Length: 212
Image (tube, rainbow, N blue to C red; front, side, top):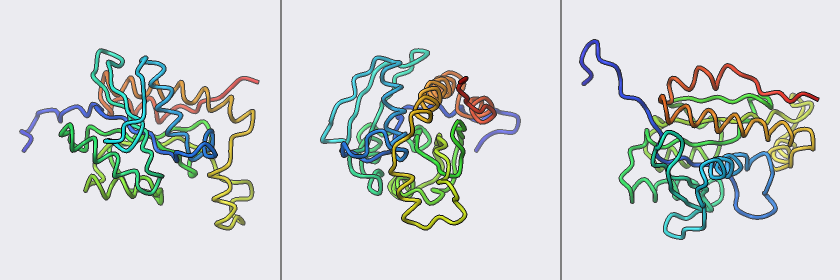
C-alpha cells in the first residue's frame, strides 16, 4: 500500500511490442503501423531485431535512450494471437505487465495523432484483446497511432473498414506517417527517461503535420 504523501512508482517500459501481421502482403499497411514503430525504434537505438521461435516473433534487445535496457518484439502469430508472443517474453524474463508498452493502430484517431495511456480496454482491437487476455490485466501502457477512418465512414460497411485497415498508405500519407514514427520514437524515449505518465502530456497534445 502506498503511504500518504509518497509518489507512485514511475512506469518505465522494459518490453516494447508493435502489433501487426507477418505476411509480406501486410507490409506497409495501416494495420501494421505497430511493426513500423518497432522498426523505427530499432533503427534509432541500433538494435537488431530477428526471428526468435521461442518468443514467436521478431525479437531484439539492447541499450536504448538514456541507457535503459530494452526489449523489442514484433509478434509473428497474426494479430488475434499477439498475446501468446507477448506472454512468452514476459514469462521468460519475469516482466510485470506494467513494464510492457504496446504500440498499435487506431482508426478512431486521425492521421497525425497519437495517444499514450497507462491502461485501458482493447477498444475493439483484436491484437489488444489477445494481449489483455494473456497478460490477465489491462493495466499496462499502450501507444495508439491514428490511421483515420475510411472516407464516408458513416456509411461504410465492415468490408470497407477491413479494406481501409489492411490497405496501404497513399504517398502523402506515407510522408506524414514517417514524421509520426519519428515522433513516436520521441514519445517512447521520453517514457524511458521520465516515465509514461509524464510522457503522456507531450505525446497526447501534439498533432504531427508535414509542410507541403
